[in-house]
Image: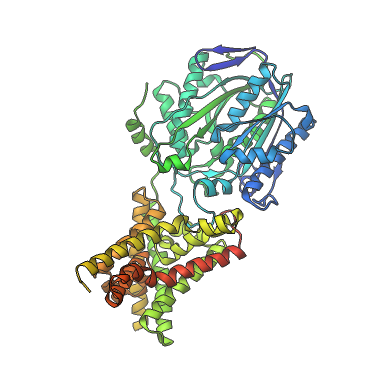
Length: 342
Length: 147
Length: 122
């Protein structure tokens, strides 16, 4: 059974494992430092479809199909899929997954969706409500641009703090069993807002959410950053990572050599013109599914904290002058089913 | 320790690298100047071909708009603008790009509510407030018999 | 020589007006749409005050091609229309003067959208 630890954290006594995971990416992602991690690379950003939205759905469909194939399962053997994305009404997920016939739990956590879907799926599994579930999400540079910013062909200039939405998707098949890695615990984030209004500086807007969730987890479990091999944030980018380290340093937690960021790993910031780094649900999802899960399975990493951050605003409220509210969900993963510091 | 938004704003500003002002200014100056010089070249050409001042000026606008729309369609204009900044925004070519880019982008939502309606998402306010300003000016001219 | 001088003046004045726009982008939080709108409205104002026509006379396309010139054109159109048609000119002047530019942008964009497809950046 799940047990609460402290005020915010949930630990699993019989932790669910990740049976298989898959990552799908596009050209820019494939050309990045982690290009080899992708199971499927489609260099055409339309993914053979007519619109960008259809392309994103196709990408998510491919990620789930690939994860099922790697798990040696068919869709009918999965009892629920937990998914979401950045698009209005999460249409990337709904239309990508509509043909599967798997009970669907739609989630919105903006770029935190991979961690959020892992949290919800793990809790369903732990409660015995399902025996097997899929967590997945995606983002597409072009759908995000046309929904949140400008048309693709519009001649705008991005400031150095802007981040680049990854065109990528990740899907993970979760079940109870003995296959590592295991989801040992989760901390659901609180909504944080320290008044950043600049939509071109998402890292700065989201860093307080990551700091709050990490602080909650460390306090609840009595651990510190040095107890983990890696503390990896979703997509704070260069600016947000720096701010996160500073915020936690003020609270007495030293992240210096433990912290890494999916947005900084996915792209080469110098060569790929992504300014402060990658972002989007698909950034954290593909790095998690394609890079971190295999490292944990091969026991190259033992205990890690995966914290995906999300900005919960819409263009409408930002135009109305609202600041950018953010959230960060934490997943504590381990290559071992028990033991360790917790 | 709870941080105030003001404190955090200062911290965030310190952590955020500023735009490379010197390089951006130079690029805007060179590209913007280049587009204007190109326009001047067309103006002189049209006048040499016998157009009067007004026709030549209109010809320059239409020519530059045509070129900007073409470069937008060929996926070139946005890549120029990435470097040129205001150099491609402020000339009439920037206005043309702001009409053409949503037209292309939102064709997928249909010819009426997509292409036709969304064409104005950036250029609309330019036309609205430009026209409104001109009407106010006309009103002043007419009321005070300044013509 | 006259041609080169004209081109140089257009280059310098046009470049300077764009550089001012770049300062607005980098130093203020103004979005591009706000900058374009401000340029046109300020252009109407400078046209009304008789300042901008002098700049156009000096720099030619260097002053008429930036969107300030578009505002100046609106002002000029209203001035001439009010002179010719009286009160009706208040409404018709701006649009009439701007007609060629706006119609060209709309029509060319329509054709472009029929022919081309947007692509991912880079």
